[in-house]
Image 1 (tube, rainbow, N blue to C red):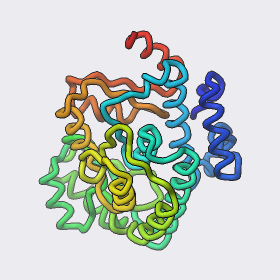
Image 2: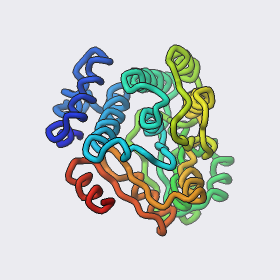
Image 3: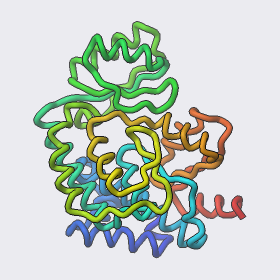
Length: 293
């Protein structure tokens, strides 16, 4: 993850070095070499994923110039929201990478104290899920598309909800390989610690609209963003509504920066009329630059 960027881009190399210096240990070594168990620790995986995404964003700017950073809006899904804040100039990357590491530590401790799980359900609408949540006590964690919803909560409750969803016509139920019940009330004890960490950092007003996860509307001040990040630990990620807000506001092209292309796939399912590109390496960026030119 991110190795090709490191080899091909000075901006990416500087980004990974900045992450290492900010955290005080060689995160880049863990990203490139593992071991997998160490990388999968949420306190490492969160800053690792964000570092790769920011490295990709900066590589794009390096390749195409400052104007390449101009956008109608930026957004990110859960952890990805922090990358969008760096892109929008709200928070410095060195502060952001420390913040997401702290976020990972807090979420991991909350998961140890109040164990839970998550599952993706395909093929049921929100109304059907509202009923299942009421019957089982699980919570909606991510509304990704019209027919892809992620649930979160107590392990037994999630298992029961998966059974109910299957019985009521879900096309597929997929338990997720996560360490806790993220975006649910089981994360509530992490909120105070995250608020303290955020309180010690400088948040500027964004230089371009940031579309928040919780209410799917533009966040225009540093104070609004602080509240969004704390609330986002327990509240549902309204990704479908965030994308629709951007489309309704006139966005016709989306570019996903970072490892993989999960969000690009979701956006295509939300609105097939928009152009969507996922870029995780310099080859994809050069192709995109040629198209844009």
